[in-house]
Every structure is written in C-alpha cells, then in structure tokens.
Picture 1 (cartoon, protein in one colour):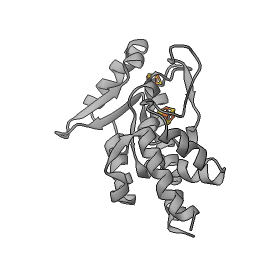
Picture 2 (cartoon, rainbow, N blue to C red):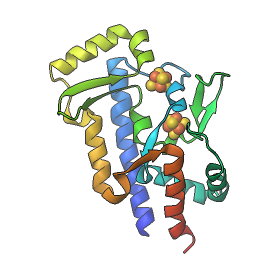
Picture 3 (tube, helix red, strand yellow):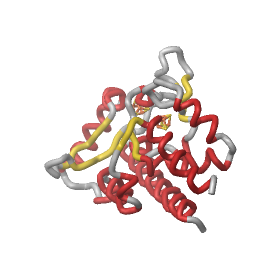
Picture 4 (cartoon, protein in one colour):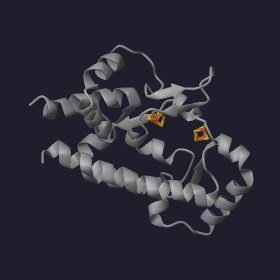
Length: 192
Ligand code: SF4
Ligand code: SF4
C-alpha cells in the first residue's frame, strides 16, 4: 500500500465517522438542513489540502483529474466548483462530490463548538434558526446544561484531522484552490 493509499483510507474512515456523528446529532436536535437548500455552497467555503485528497484520488481513478485541474486553473469562480445549481438564484442545488466533501461541509447547518476562549457555543445557520426556532432554543438549553459529549464539538474533529498529517491540514484555502493543490499532491503518486 502506498503512503497515498494509506492516507486516503484514513481520511475515508474519518469522513464516515463524522458523517455518522453529525447527521445523527442534527436529526436528534431537529436542526437538519432545509430540503433542497444549498445556499451555503454559494459562499466562501474553505478547506485544507488534506481534506480534498479523497476527491483528488477519486478524480485520478476516474480519469477526470486532468480535466478538473484545467477547469479549476482557468476559473476565477470563488464559490465551490462542485456545487450544481437547481434554481436561477442558486439557493437550491446539490453537491456533486457528496461522498468526498470536506469537514466543514459535513457539519454545515448546526454544530456545537468551543470558541477561542474555550467557551461552548452552538453554530446554527440563519435559515435553520428561523425555520426551526423552537428546536434551536431547546438545543441552546441543552448546551448550557452541558449535555453534549466532547465528540459533538467540531473543534475535536479538526484536531483529529491535524493528527493525520499536520503539515497538510493546518492551512486552509478557498475550496477550489485546496482541490487544485490536492490534485497536484496526488499526481506525485499517480504519475510515478
Ligand atoms: S463540496 Fe459540496 S457541500 Fe461543500 S461547498 Fe462544495 S458543493 Fe457544497
Ligand atoms: S446550512 Fe443552511 S444554508 Fe446551508 S444547506 Fe443547510 S439550510 Fe441551507
């Protein structure tokens, strides 16, 4: 097994663990995303090279890496290249790389975290907050009563990512740029 294959498997396992934890948590709190909404994919999403590595590997395996590399190199688009709009204003749409999306896209919507002073807070998107305000208020009360386990906090998952390869996980970039860098990194293994 090459170093890239080993790292890719660790990242895929890590993604599965986050997926299980955060989607269950959002369901339990009744703070899930609104159906068909993709509004936050239009904003500035950032990720590290490491988080985009499973996508880069998949692109090489499917023979799409060169084409996507060219497309991303030639675009000035700030929003995510992989978001597919389903309405003119773009508020409705879907992710075309769902199984390879980075950490932030797996916790989008509602997640507890510790701020830089280690204080607990609940980050909830304003659409969910206004649509599901009763569930939001209940979740804030749960947080105040310390009813969340440590693994519920997004910071813990960022730290786990850093443990895998800190030099590839520390710096974050706009998602399209992080993907370009991940393709360049993976190419060293695929073109050996
Ligand atoms: S990777 Fe998917 S979920 Fe994340 S910003 Fe892009 S389209 Fe949205
Ligand atoms: S986090 Fe909010 S804006 Fe983003 S997809 Fe979910 S409901 Fe829509």
